Length: 380
Image 1 (cartoon, helix red, strand yellow):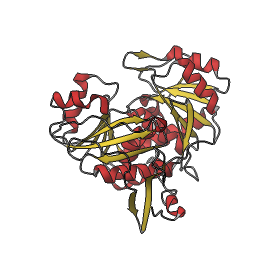
Image 2 (image 1 turned 90 degrees about the horizontal axis):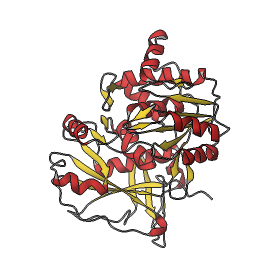
Image 3 (image 1 turned 120 degrees about the vertical axis):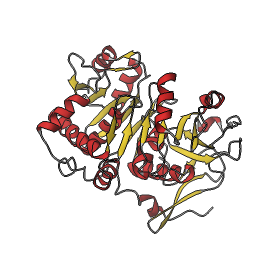
Image 4 (image 1 turned 135 degrees about the vertical axis):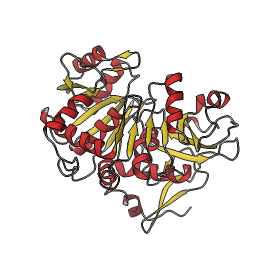
């Protein structure tokens, strides 16, 4: 197998979620960037919100370079807070909302988190008690903050309404003030199988999303509708990174509720739907996949277990498998008809500027391990 020069893996290094957002806000300020069940948000509005929230985080006494633990679901508030924290020069550790308090506390200790930030509620989850239990068990946490929709006694309120009032009181265009950090900060996700925090360079996530977008044919004219919280490698790659790289509107739906999902599906129209592979057959039987540009079927894969192909699926739209492998990469493979293709049977390359970049390839012994610009190396 012919590998590209190692330097080609760094072609995405100058870019970050923040620079992508600022560029989109300058070029297409009134275009809808993200939508969830509560609101829609243009690039300009999101850029202003991110700038205000970045300054609010600094006003809370957090120091440049400290790590913040951000828990959340498939909502705009999580994406906005993620970008704002990166804008402010912090490093983010992302956590799914279904972690038990003891698991979240262990994660907070492992990453030495200075702050815990998350929604006050998510569907039926009421999260106040869990947050303070975590803060009591992780001595590094100095700040607990909530993203709404309600306030929590003893927690700093960073809800959309609070940030909006701050932006109104401190008007700017959301682009010039609150400059991005000199170098893109890393984003940490949790490998739940090994309970290991994995730190990803944004350039790696960018390369993986660029590869995903090429194989799934993501473009500006067709929205992406994702049910995945952007708290994992795959959720980031197929969510905010894919949307900001392509210019596509990202619809986020969570927590999953049948009636509201149908409404979101109708709003998104001819979209790329990102769903767990386990529910795809039920969606196909219900006619949900009719009229879609594609369906992206996300499967969690443990390298040590080897590859077990997902079952065949008959669908009226194009199907792409997205294999989320050990929080180290996410490999997209279009299906051949109804049948899945293993991850990276041939090396993946993408073109960027004048470079041809090796994004992902299987290891030489054909084990389920990978290398390339879109792969975070396993921790030593």
